[in-house]
Amino acid sequence: QVQLVESGGGLVQPGGSLRLSCAASGSIFSISTMAWYRQAPGKQRELVAGITPGGITNYADSVKGRFTISRDNGKRTVYLQMNSLKPEDTAVFYCKNVQTNSWGQGTQVTVSS
Image (cartoon, rainbow, N blue to C red; front, side, top):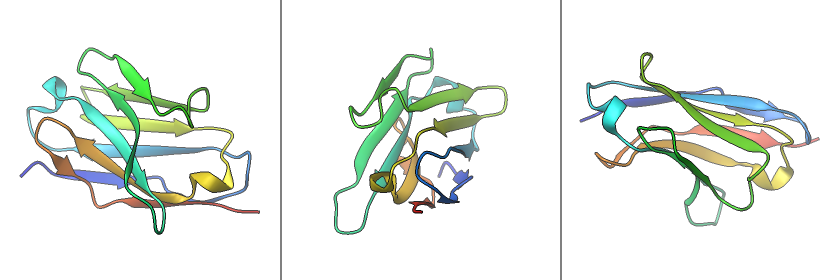
């Protein structure tokens, strides 16, 4: 199975920033659509952002203008830059390789003052 390892989560204050990273194994990374999802307690897992192999992005309405997804195919890594964080962003964030339906282990993001 394709391995995905997230990092960069943590505790931040409202208005703060975090950058999540997802390091992927496998030669198919560069031709795979990648995505970030999040799941808050008691809620469904939801799509936050996606990026195609060519760099086309999409975002959930709730994060547009605040979050940026990017990728570095040479490093086989996808990033999620999160700015202007809000308490409602608190969730476990998961990286996904859409083509292989592979998930990372998740990284906790907590936004609290």
